[in-house]
Amino acid sequence: QVQLVESGGGLVQPGGSLTLSCAASGSIFSINVMGWYRQAPGNQRELVAHITTGGTPTYIDSVKGRFTIARDNAKNTVYLEMNSLKPEDTAVYYCNADVSTRLGSRGAYWGQGTQVTVSS
Image (cartoon, rainbow, N blue to C red; front, side, top):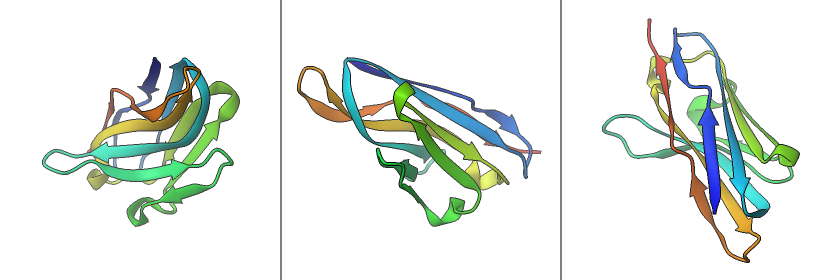
């Protein structure tokens, strides 16, 4: 089995910063793309950013220039640095990883989610 554990959410004022972390553990052979999604109340879950094994990032337009995704392959960990936060960034943020396991299977795994609230 594979587990993803997120941390770093919280309450922040508009213009503030937060950094989310997500560590993967378990029967991991390799991790392909890792990413962050978010879901606000009443909205569908949307991709925020993802990053390849080689470190190539992709962002949705609304976070470009404000968010930075990074990963540490040795630690099976992905980060999301969020700056200049806006109230519309308020959501539950989920980590996602495309994992090849030592058992020979491959699949997408999700973290439990961490709340980010941007409010004054």
